[in-house]
Length: 115
Image (cartoon, rainbow, N blue to C red; front, side, top):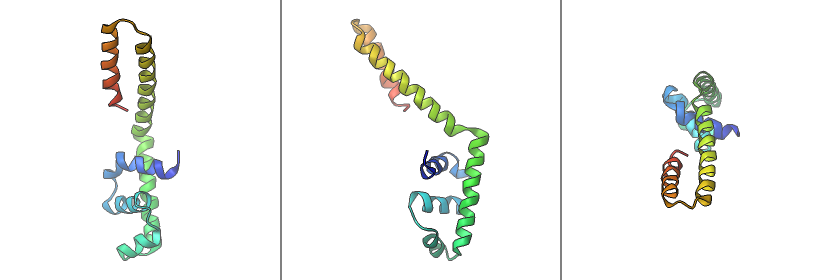
């Protein structure tokens, strides 16, 4: 997975555990696509200070994920749900019983909200 996408996802999960400054700099850098110089200018600090804060924030996010594994579990669950939805669609298409088809439709509908 691309680092930018990975950092954005980790920010969504663990971002509130970072300092406000780290979160803000990471958000500006990864989600708003601002350069280190632009962030530094906006905050009246050096480019190096911005880079240090971003690196510390990234390291914290990866540390949280390593310890808690929420993103990994979420991605695994989404993959399993997608596979179940695929199998349900096959069953529904092969079914001739209207009651079974209704149950399968209901299950498919409920699971599709989890992906």
